[in-house]
Length: 116
Image (cartoon, rainbow, N blue to C red; front, side, top):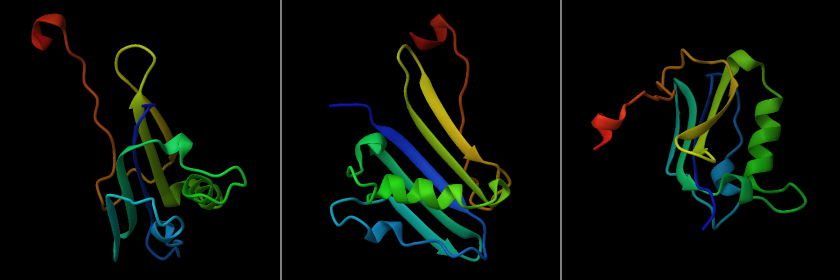
């Protein structure tokens, strides 16, 4: 139960990124890429808000603290989760939209006849 998010973030090349995948042994990213394009982390269907301990030593706190230390143009963070009504809520930080991973998000408008 609970709200599950889709989370992706990427960091520009030349920036040393901690190995977030090693912080918690029972917590796993679906995709981790470290190459000449930079670093990409992606996880689907995760309780992102609930993946931390009370002291801030978990993955969520560590990622947030690290990204906050960067210049906005050097990273992009996107979290999407079900909203209170219909559709998805999106949290975005950073401004590296032209990243070589193609990390971004897509939403579209539909009408009732289309959904039946």
